[in-house]
Structures are given as C-alpha cells and as structure tokens.
Image (cartoon, rainbow, N blue to C red; front, top):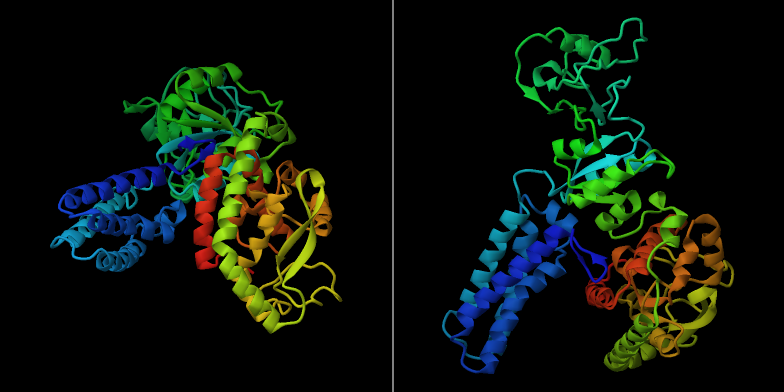
Length: 531
C-alpha cells in the first residue's frame, strides 16, 4: 500500500489512477495534434477530462465500490455515459472541431478505461497482493483477521496465524485448531496414555507428507473428524513413499489449518510466502522473537504492530487496537514550519470561499429572514484547540426556540426543529460557510476535526477513550472524518468519527488537506452525510 506525504492510499486505486490518466493523456495526444487553435484544444482537453472526473464523482476509485462493481461493471458504464454527455457539451462550446476528433478522443479513453479495469479490478482470482502472517491468538489477532477479510477489499490476504507462545524449535503438545499455524517436526501421533485432547509430536526431524494430513472441520468424513482421529489416520501410512511438502494447506475450511515443519519464524515466512508480519499479541510483554523480526525486515519483509497495520488498511485508527503508548511515542505532531504553512493555507482557502460564496450568502440571508423569525446567524460555544472555548457562527437552520424545552440534543433525521430553508442549507453544508470568520480570527482551521459543543465534549470524554486527542489541533470547517463518515448523532457515531480524527492528527499534511478540500466539493454536490 503506497504512502505519499504521510497518507496511505489504496495500492490498486493508485495503479488504476496512474494507468487511466496515461490512457486519457494518450487519447488526447493522438487527437489533439489536429486541433486548430487554443479553443479547440481546450475543448478536447475538457472532453477527455470528463472521463476520470465522471469515474471520481461515481466513487469508482474507492476500493470498496470498485470491488462491488467488478463483476458487472454497471457503475463504470454509467459513469462513461455521463462523461460522453458532458464531453458533447464541451464539444459544442469549442466550436467546429476536426471531424471525428471528439468521438475518437472519448472513444479511445473509454476503451482504455474498460480494459484497464478489466485487468486491474475484475480479476478472476480473489487473492490479494500482500500475504499477511498474524502473530497472536487473542482478540487483537481476531480483529486483524476480520479487517483483512472484510475491509481490505482484496489488497491483503491472510497467509496464516501463529500463536507467539509456541516455540518453533521444540516439539509441542497441541490440538489442531482451524485457522492457526501448527508447527510439526514429524508425523502427528497420538501420545500413549495422554488425554484425548492432546496431540504429541515425536522429535524426529521430518517433513510432513502431504497425503498423510487429513484435517477437515467441514470436509472430512465424520468418523475421522477431529485432530486425534485425523492424526491416527495419518500415522497409518508412515512407511509409504509419498510426495513431501514443507507446507500443506488443506482447503476444507474457509480458514484451514496449515502444518509447517519450520524451526524458525523466518522459515515460516519463507514457506508461506509472507509479505507482511503483523504483531497482534495481547500483551507487550509476550515472548516475541525480536531478533527474528529484525532479520525479516533486513530481508524485505514488513513487520508492523496491529494498530499501525490497521491504520494502513483502513486509513483510520481503530480504538479497539489502540494503546496509550501508540499515541505517546512518535514524531512531533506540530512544528513552527508546518504551523506557518497551515495558517497560510487556512487564510487562502477561507478567502477564496468568502469571495465565491458572498453572492450566495446574500440570497440565503434574505430567504432565512422571509421564512421564520429570528436572526440570520446564530452563535454557539464550541471547544477549540487545547480545550479552549470560542464562539462559532453559522447560518440559522432551526427555529429560535429549538432547544428551549429539550436543552442540547443530537440532531436527528427529519428533525422537526429544522426549517425548510434550513434543511436545504444542512444538506448542501452552506450553513457552515460563516465559520470562515473563526478561521480568520485564528480559532479554527479550514481542515480539522469537527468542532463540538462543550456539553457533548464532557460526555464523550467520559465514555470514549482518547477523545481528548481531538483537541491537539484546531477544529475545521471540513475534515477527514467529515468526508469519510456521515453526520453523527450518537456516542457510537462519535467513536467511529474519532478514529478518523486520530488518523488525521497523526498524518496531517498540506497534501492531505488539499485532498480533503477536493473531496469536500463532491460531498457538498451530492449532499452526503448531511442531517
């Protein structure tokens, strides 16, 4: 998964963007040579740009949407249809274009996009690009498995899971459990006089014959199911000449047992063709092969703790995997240079927003006054950086007596307190524009965590761990959580949004701020997540 300016991106989406941009550029280069004058060339450029723009607006660079659309491709076809419509409009604005230039440009770009997505997205196999070995046997390891299976969207696949309490150098007594890496130094035998729940491993240094392992929680016959019965069957054929395999994967279960004859972690990684090792042990004091991890890194294998791996995959920080030391140790979260750059960025973006929105604000102010009594703007106290309280201004979207009887409450879907013009303002996020004056005063940033009311902040700090970390930065008009998660109206929503805020706190950069602003435009256009 590639990283740019501190932010992690989907590897498959990044490859797709690069390939499709090259194809659109090639189509433009082929047909742009016949353009007569800058106006025709500008029309062809705009027409060609309609293809990636339509794909972006349809969320077809999002890994989850790409994966869901990979079989039928209906989303891509719809997006290309809208791109053709927009390109035709640009073609009319461009005057008389060379014969067939517009159709050729759009046609070459569209065919290239379809072929690229057929090759990079609609793959026949479901195996990911990166194989992961999970070191752990508890809830943290189970959470990493769940993330890879349900939220990695084919970028990663589980090669195996290894209990860190197992000493690979010595024979162990264990029961074979589906979904775990089981070490073996010889054929599995039932230990005489032992309890039925144990399997003994004799000290003979042998590999495991592939035909002798019969492990099938769902596929083996009933009379030989279970590790003890299967080990008995395996022991019956020890003397026969059979093909040997150092790693045997038995596909009778979605998460099969893998028997490995390796004596070291490096051997396990080699046998299972692992690209990434994730340390997901329950306790930091667990016995971990530190020297082995160092050798793996020197050999090109990525070794990550559970929280950092989940950060890469999800682009948020799962609180379930987070420990206080994960936030306490690391690079500084601020510096004079980054603060100065961010301040300049805030002022420039706020000035652009005010200039562009000034005519709209005038019309909206008149509509608010005509619909209901009360002021155009309303003010509320919000919590800023370091827990400081400041006054925030927005366009009024509710009745003036909205909280007279109830006090502070979460906004709800179809909230009866919201006026008709207020519902439109909330859906389009236009009510947020007056917050730019708080940015000019230095109390807010253009990009940052959503500002919350002191009443809710006190509640959430007592119910959600690490919630105070949001106050490490100034709150923002838009932010990573605002574009990645819909409007929150509960403690669980606040917990989910905090995970995105924590990611932004640790990975903030000028490039990420630009990306968030760019994505905010799409969020506003389609009215996503508003309430």
